[in-house]
Image 1 (cartoon, rainbow, N blue to C red):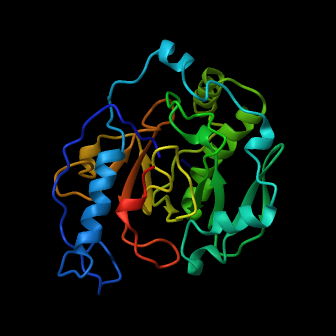
Image 2 (spheres, one colour):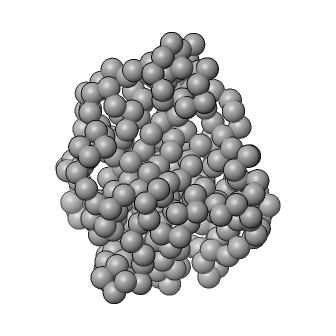
Image 3 (cartoon, rainbow, N blue to C red):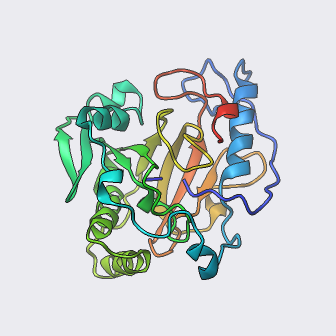
Amino acid sequence: MPICLTNDKVVNVPSVPSFSEEKRNPYRRGKSMNQNVIQKITLAAFALVAVLGAARPGRAADDKAPYPSMAPLDQYLMADRDAEIALARSAAPPSISSGATVMVLGRHGYETAVEGKNGFVCIVERAWMDAFDSPEFWNAKNRGPSCFNPQAARSVLPLTLKRTDFALAGMSKAQIMDGIKKAFENKELPAVEPGAMTYMMSKQGRLNDRAGHWVPHLMFYVPVKDNMTWGADMAGSPVLTNPHFNGAPEPVTEFMVPVSKWSDGTPADAGDHAH
């Protein structure tokens, strides 16, 4: 799904613990040859991620937004189907994405391009997966490669597919928001499953005009709850909150954890994420 970022609030950046490059878990404490990179990545993450409850521009500002309404459909589509498959797979390491189902966006919604065998599903999300009050909700340039694990493929991916169907049907942001709310109320969308998570580790993605591909990260989904249950956004915590769901209207909280490498194994450089 695409990151919700803001430039209208200064965020105090906490210190970040070091992590051991020798451990398979990149967030296990220990000595690190990689410490500075991790610190820079998380500094960038805290500096760019939106804060829950931050002030948002009103309707008058929306009228002046660069993307006030949906662009022609062709601008959201990728003419090269193979290129979209490759971009979708770049969301996760090849050991995962090579066996995943891949879906691509067509004129009538997402369609399966490659049948997988490991339960993961990789797609390239479009800007309408951003927060409903985001000025880039209709930005046709944005591409968010995402690879859902089996639990997320069953319980989070349907939300992406539903939003996409509404967008392609010509609905406005307000209509899409209302449609999603009713879909949850009517049990047309499933509750998030325990263990649902998504890989977003592609350096070929483009999450918005300012952030570019941002930083490689993992996303974890839980029912709407207080950030403190995960220690998100606290000093020393690598866990961040993505505020683009959180009951507005989706009853889902999404936590993000930046990681030190892109899906192809190359080190992340926190200095080249913003534009």
